[in-house]
Length: 203
Image (cartoon, rainbow, N blue to C red; front, side, top):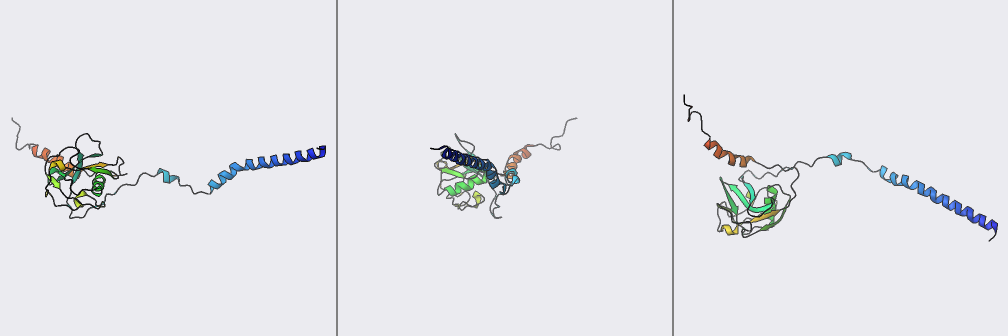
């Protein structure tokens, strides 16, 4: 190869190297440029979770309170117990479904139900069996809005008490309605509080 040919190749090689370096130097700016046109919403990431508004049941639906009870359980699972007419009772597993379990869990502030259990898997409850043959679509605001045989109309035993397993995830912004529980707890206290007129101080 002649010296003139080598010189030509070196020039072409140098030109290619310079071109490649120039392109590489532009890549960072090109990469940033494609993001600069994107909209930026910093407030989107700083907004708190929206407050949960519990669906309001119809005015003719009785107000109840639910709780999960029983043996060997986590806070998000247990035997379904209902406070109605001044007394805690249970729910029979006849015709119960995952849709009814969803209603129970959401009424207690959980996102959804994972499953439900039959045959008093969390132990036998006490008191009346308030609901039997419960049917829910899953869209009800409260278990009291689901159809059933009627309050206290049941042919079950406590060996058929139903339980639910709720998701551990809570509904964002959910606020537990303590109004009925406060009335439950306050009633015996008010009855047992003596008045000053009844027990006057001795002089």
